[in-house]
Image (cartoon, rainbow, N blue to C red; front, side):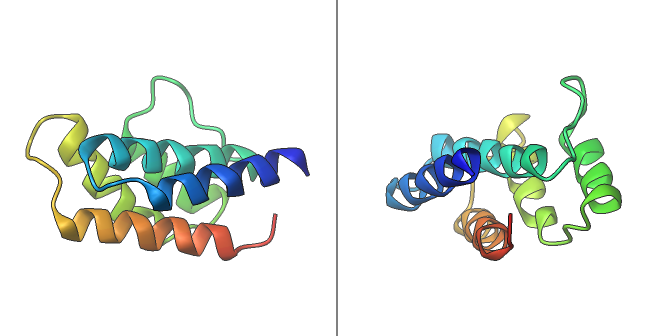
Length: 101
């Protein structure tokens, strides 16, 4: 579908970005778009942890946890992103990209 193609294109753009807090946020947004494409649209007021739990119940995405942890830390100012968090997000998106639409 067009939505899936657009998501893949944005995913490729994400991979080309330099590591930064903005890249981490963009990647997290991509993971939320993927959830929406697969029928697990979270409420706008949902926290990242609530989204994680809902996604695991609805879509069965255990690989979503590393993306949530990294985003949560950066978004709520607990810490700057770490290379491990970025790696977790990249692996999350790789896993999502490899799933069939």
